[in-house]
Image (cartoon, rainbow, N blue to C red; front, side, top):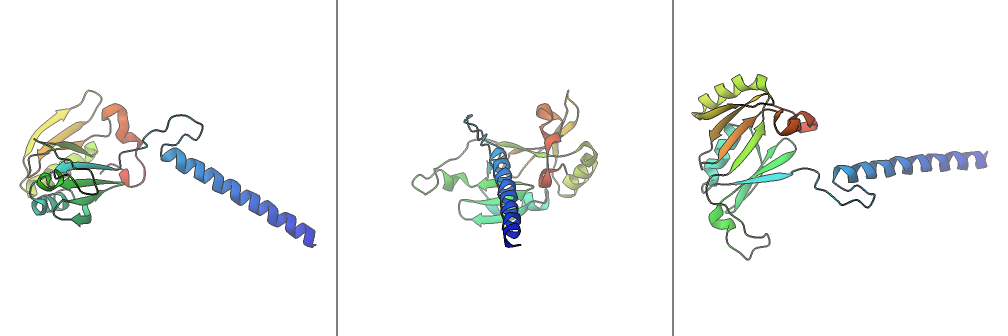
Length: 182
């Protein structure tokens, strides 16, 4: 009886480690590691950054107009906001351009650009919400591959787009989890 029990236990252990091995391989694939000697690739964009001289104004804008959540504040350099499975970082370039910190210095001159994923069906709601917050629509663009974008400016002058999932070869159609279109 004991020998049969040991064999059963050994089989369960093998099955467990096979499942763990497959899960680790899948995680590696998702993180950009092909695991077969092929060159490693970036898996996805985790964060993007814009620059604004007034972090409090930027925080109010992105949390109230776009519904983003604060992940953390790191004054006087910046703030991090959660958007689905990624982060939008807003930096004050007056502080991030100073060399010598633990993170390499950086900054930008002029308006930046970024886009939030927005379904065609959500655009009327976005127009209403933007109007409610006094945010003017700068322009709307109809894309050849389908869908429409709305462009606005944040208080720092950055160009913010509400983009359809159809652009860039349908990248927005390949979402999962918290990255679903709004």
